[in-house]
Image (cartoon, rainbow, N blue to C red; front, side, top):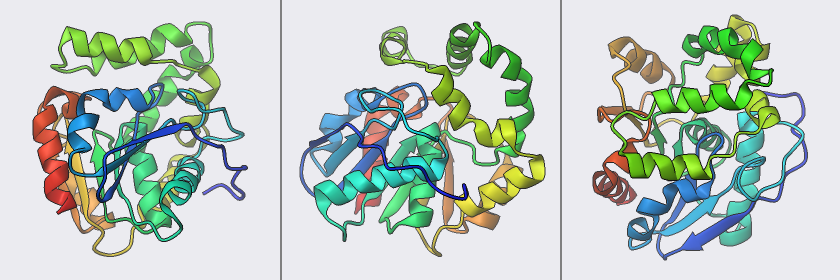
Length: 256
């Protein structure tokens, strides 16, 4: 965790529906509208609160992009719209999966769904460091869009084009969000991840992956979050958009 969190950033957000509070947190370079295809259906069962993370969408940039800082911003919105005693169910995709996990480590939640965000960041660190020179160069936009094009899985052209239209890669935001992997030693990164995954015992936690990360990853995750359930939907990076009705059904089931 950072020694001191930067000032809270006032996030842009919207709400739909009524019922249990359901917070949707988008992935890196995207915004709350990435959830458009599933929001109306979710709003039939829940009060859906969608946020633009700091440095994304219509929200201003901040002084830092640690997952805990993102989570503090989201919590400020939750308190604003639902009061200090609100206990939301939190769904996060990609970067949002880490933010949702950090949120659950810091604040009460009814449950978490992490959509296709591996949490063993050490496995991603070497790959990310390998791209660092290009990420810090004028090739940044090209590299980022190339990365996400490779992760689309079976997402159809129309859906992928929609995501690409709303994607706004900002070099400072991306580098800040990936600073854990770029700036920390493997040992310090492992310790930081363990802190982020220190959820209260029994917290409902579902991971929906678009590719199978293997039994070793599931074992690693359950050593840190014993309540974790892991599902593989063979859909690439956007399982919630490839199988929207199935995903909504899974959320509704967990909402109870």
